[in-house]
Amino acid sequence: FLLSRPPISREELEEIRKETLRRAKEAEKARKQKLMAQDIAREKRMASLEEKAKQAAVARAALREKREREMETKGPEGIVKSIVEEYGVSRARESVNLLTRLFDKILKYPKEPKYRKIKLDNAKVHKLIVRPAGGVALLRCAGFESDQASSESKNNTILLPATADLDKLKKCRQVIYDTVHKRTATCIPQMMQLLREDEKKREKFTPERALYAAMSLRSLFANVVASGSPDAHVKASLDFLSLDTTSQIFRFRLRPVPRSVEILEKMGYKLVRGYWRVTEPDMAMFEAAVADLSLEIAKMKPDSPVFKAVHKLVKANSDSAAKSFIGVLMACMDKILEDPDNTKYHKLKLKALYRKTGPLDGGRQLLQKLGFRIDDIEEVALLRLTKKGEVDISIIGLRRSELERSWADSLAARARR
Image (tube, rainbow, N blue to C red):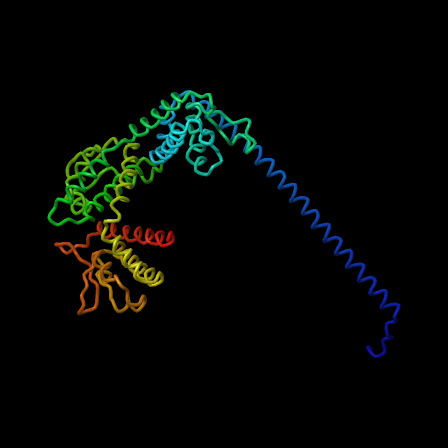
């Protein structure tokens, strides 16, 4: 059949070729029309979204302006109290500290125009003054006005006019500073200073005793702050307002440091049937105590044995070796915390450890500071137990936190160099 079929003529081939080209052109034209329609639809969607975003921005700006005007009626003291209640102590302190620095610059250089102008779209200013309800209102209470003549960015600059009363600014600065620090003043700075002085008077001074007492108190007070969470399940399942006197945290971390017990009493705790309990905590005060303790812990950090050992290890070895070694230690301590009664996690085989990391300068010292005892005969690092043969979970958890914090700090220090 194929042999008997007549051959295709040139005219037929040309017709086939033309038809194929015509169809290809039509397909290409349809494809381009489809893409063009998609582009037009996308542009319309983008334009619609941009318009909605602009409208939302205008609405937010109007709402913010209305909110700030309402806040102005409260006066500087009332505004600061509202910021503390709504955003917490730490945020309020940061906002007030930035405001007082800006005001101090103006008071120090009253004839310098650049200090009288504040860009509200600056990242730090936006975070600490614009976003918290009442931040811009505090500026207005001090005499600042919107800079309508500025060509930089519409409604994004606020300035203190040259004719403004600096006494009003000074008075406002003092009111907001006194209000936030009076509202959030705690006994922590004074008591921690006394605590450190007491510890230095001991025959065997151990810097970590004061540090771990502060870390334990911070954790305890942070639990009290968490108890004010709107999460009903958290409230119902955990009693964050008490501390068992038989717990390791109290027996090993707080009771040996008498000043820490005084801090509990000053924060409103009372000893009831073997429990230190606070019944009606002032959440703002406890949040302020957490912030103050974080500052005190940062001051004590350089004296921490773990901190010093980690920095020595990082300085003396390569980044990869130090990272691997510390990673193994963190994993080991995590396993101890998860299953403290499992004795296999109480022992680290040094040969296997160094096989992964290689020999490290300062590795033995770090193990010892973390609570391990080196057995050179068996070539193992054994976890030290209490006199009763228990695992001190509280100290393991604190040292684990200190190890991670010191490692992060050492990496940041190296990056800065």
